[in-house]
Amino acid sequence: MFVRKHLPTSSPISNTILKNKIILPALLALSTAAISTTSMAVAAVEFTHQDWQVACDNTRTCRLAGYQAENNSDFPVSVLLVRRAGSNAGVVGKVKLGGAKESATKALLQLGNRHRISLFINDKDLGETKPFSAVAGDSELTSTQVTALLNALTKPSKIELVSRNSRWQLSDKGATAVMLKADEAQGRIGTSSAFLTADNTSKPNINVLEAKPAPQLRLVVPNPKAHSSSNKKFSMKSSQLAALVKGTLKDTNSDCPNLMDKSPWRVSRLNSTQLLAQHNCWTGAYNMGTGVWVINDSTPYNPALVTTDATDYADGKISVVQKGRGIGDCLYKADWVWTGNRFSKSHEGTTGLCRMIEAGGAWQMPTYVSEVKIAR
Image (cartoon, rainbow, N blue to C red; front, side, top):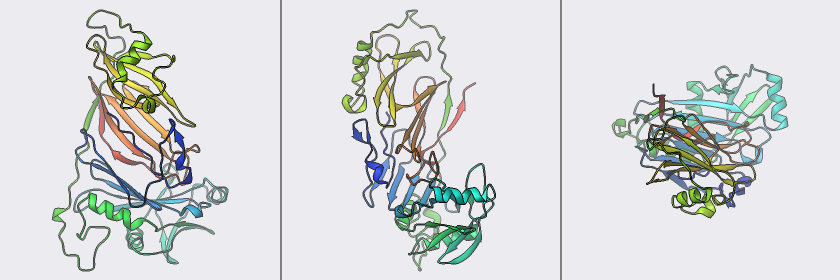
C-alpha cells in the first residue's frame, strides 16, 4: 500500500493546502524521515536541513543536493553529489545554474549552450568544470573540484559558481548535517571514506555497507480484451463499488473525499479474473489525485488499493506526479507496474527542494528504484 510522502521544501509556500490538508509542511531542523516498505530490502532515507538535503535509495546510493540561500534567489544554483555504497565508492559532482529569475535568465542567455563555469571557494579559482551538457542542463565537476568542495562544506565557506561576470553563490548551511546522515546510511561513520572524518581516523572501510541490487520487476502488459473466466460481464453500481473499496482507506475524508460522489468510475480488465477500478479522489489548487484499485471480477472481490494520488495510467503503469508548489519547480513522483497479478512499486522520489532552479525540479532524488523489463 502506498504511503504518502511529503515533498521536502524549505519554501514559505510549503504551507500549500492539498486535499484540505497540508501536504508540504516545513521540515523541522534536523528531522529525519526514514521510510521502509515490505518491498524494500533497505530502508530509504530522506533528510533536509537548511539549504541541503540527502536522499538515499534502497540500493544505498546517496544523493546530496545543495542550493543557494533562500534570501539569495536572484541567481538560483544547485550542486548534486552522488556516492554509491561500498568501500571503494567515489563521489561524482554536478552543478546546475538556475534561470528561473530574470537576472539569472539574462546571464544564461548570453552564454548560450557554451557555458564556461568556474568554481571559486573562498575567492580561490578552482578552474572550470567539465563542458556544459545542453541535454542534461548541467556541468560535471572535476575530481579536484569535488575534493575541494567536500572539504569546504565541512566548515563555513564562500562557494561560488562563476560564469563571465555573473556569480551564483552556493550555501554551505546544512551541508554537514546531511553529510553525516549519508555517512550513517552507508555505514561510514568513523571511517576514512566518510564525508566527515576526524584527523585521527583509523577505522578501516571493511565495515562499510555494500550496495544492494535494485529489485527486478517484469511489467506484464494487461490484456483488456481478455474474457472473464466466469464468462460473466462485470456489472456493479457506482455506489456499490464505492462501498466495496471504502474499507481499503484509512480515512476516506482525507484520502479520497470524492469517493462517494457521482463522478464516473473507470473499470478496465487486467486479465481474465482481475479488473482495474479508478475514481477521482481529490482536487487541490494545482494537484489532483485518482484512486486506483485492483479487484476480482467476481466474489470474493478482494479490493486492493494501489494509491489515491495517481495522475496517469497506461499499459500497466500507474504514475504519480505532484507539484510541490504551483510554479512546478519541484515534484514528487512515484510509479507502479503490473506484474501479472498485482501492481508493484517501481520508483519513488522527488526532484529536490523548491528553489527556482528550473521547471520540473533540478535533480532526480529517488528513495526507491528498480529495474523494469517488459515481459515477452
